[in-house]
Image 1 (cartoon, rainbow, N blue to C red):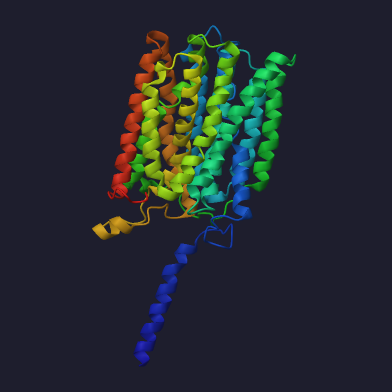
Image 2 (cartoon, one colour):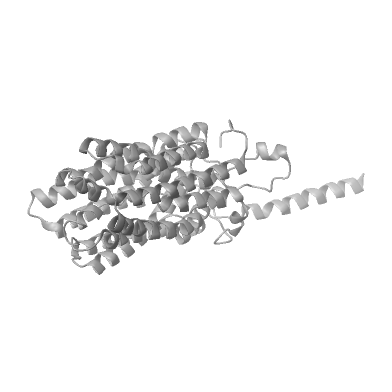
Length: 440
């Protein structure tokens, strides 16, 4: 009896010792389970929404003003560098957020974002736009994007995709408001380019202050490890980032060249500028409605469908020749393309398996979610950093194709790469669960 008691005590002691390493993080919240809603969670969503209103603000203005003498391919390097650093920045900002909290990343990045806009307002030469918007603005965006999306993901489980979609839709709202404001201030007032951009910079300052006050992580901060290379042992994770890498080669093309295409089809110059706002309006719904559906039927299931639809639209791009047809195309494309950006984060957060799959039963029942909430930023950041090279190369290649062969060659090139992305997403989904009706 005495020996059994000693054995039992030893067993309990051993179990306690084994449980100690699991609590090696600094808590940011006393409750470990995500609230999946509530005032605090939705206020963080609002903060993330406020932090991302900066996408595609000035690009279409350059080709007809400061850089009119430059080719479409040369001008596209400004936007390509911005996209490149937007995703590359996640390699640092994601792990830093998981380890030290979001504010240590968000506050200096917000200051850099506003500073970069002020530098854009002073730029007049090509290399100045490259440095101010392509590099500095892009880096600031990259240090903001992954932390805001991943932090929101810590507060939700069943509503994670929808919450992340709302955050990313902030860029679409900015893409509607800022081009219209830019057009009106430049054409209907005597402010000029410099003060117009500075006004936009002050608006961004107010929004970023709001985000810095509201945003705070929910999960405990990770104590050990900066990168998580074990994620690359998961085929679903690798196939998912491959899908986004391929898609980045093609899905930005109509967005960067939308005004150029409209002018080539003899659309009124002012209306051609507003086509950007029309596309971004549809983008807003594309970044929220499919994400809401993703929480019901699965992020991968929805992502495969919208990626396939985006590829089909790209193949049909040059069939839109009249003003009405171009506007309809922009509405449809804006909706489906927006989904590709908003769904990648919830897909990556779901694509890393907790444990190796050893049996058919475990394959069908495995919880395919990010193992820990304080790993989400690192998983998303590592994947987006690799995918960023697709964003860097894709738009200039398409610009060169447009300059030399016309828009048809670019639409075929872009559509083929996005179709390859849909194939990779399908392979990732089937590697997670081959049951067609499964919510994946």
